[in-house]
Amino acid sequence: MAKKIAVLVGSLRKESFNRKIANELEKLSSDNLDLEIVEIGNLPLYNEDLDQNPPQEWTDFRSKIKSADGILVVSPEYNRTIPGALKNAVDVGSRPYGSSVWPGKPGGVVTSSVSALGGLAANHHIRQAFVFVDVPLMQQPEAYIGNSSQIWNEDGSCVEKTQEFLKNWIDAYEKWVNKF
Ligand code: FNR
Image 1 (tube, rainbow, N blue to C red):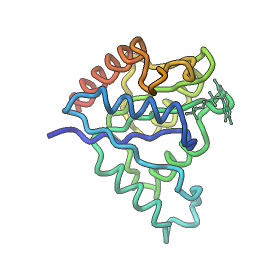
Image 2: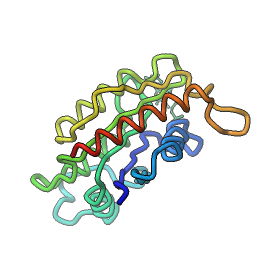
Image 3: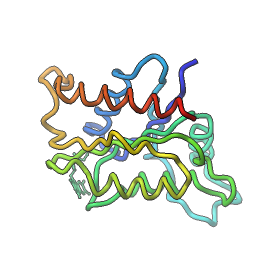
Image 4: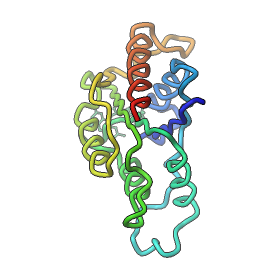
């Protein structure tokens, strides 16, 4: 049976390049992986006061992550770090204390940027948060997609060179997931 992978996209923008990259990874992945974007834009900001009576959006998000076999993050860099919406999702999933939904789920991180740096700083900040919530992250190959506005053909498809890179990356991630 295909492994279910929860995909978290760090940008809430409708035309997000990261969302497009996430969709590309879904297309390129083998039948052994079932990638599904779990939306994070509707999650109320984490507030410990609400733990006794959590918003439905938190409960739904937690159960989607709980039922996943792996976690794949595709994110931009905001001001050299992790976008707030993504960090909020990490926090929501990590609580209430003792009931975190993250531990042990094999993770992968892809960052992209319209600049040449490919979201390098955010990539490592995202890793820091997920390491702490006990998500074992694939170390290699890394994925920093630079110039993210320029990797698309006129028909909306991804340019061949980036497709090849993403295919290699998602196949490596599948092997990583299978180790757990
Ligand atoms: C950015 N951007 C950006 N890029 C980068 O390489 N390093 C950074 O620190 C930032 N900071 C930043 C902050 C905020 C608030 C925004 C909105 C954007 C630019 C970013 O790479 C670009 O907007 C991407 O297109 C965002 O990804 P999506 O929305 O296309 O997925």
